[in-house]
Length: 142
Image (tube, rainbow, N blue to C red; front, side, top):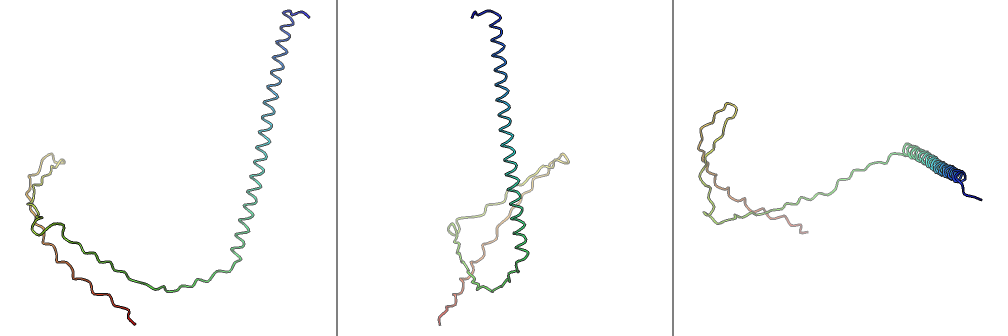
């Protein structure tokens, strides 16, 4: 057999046609497999949804048929707990002092002018006396 330009062209056309047929078959088989898998998944999901709906309906029916449970309210014992915390001064007597007042000024931007500074002084009142110690708790001697 001789290798001629006609035989070469026939071989190229045959291999191109064969490649096209194989490619088409591969794509078709992949599409068919994907479609079947999607169908099976849809059927499985539908069956699962029907089972869940039936279970929910049965549970709802069981709740409606059940008698209500009586609620009993019992008084519980109560205990009052008192925590006493003594706060002492952070510094010695006469060490901490309140300083004199300062100067306060503000600008009124709406009218375009400024207010005159005002001197403010304030003295803090003396700290109140500490509360008396709490009374002792009653003992439960029998």
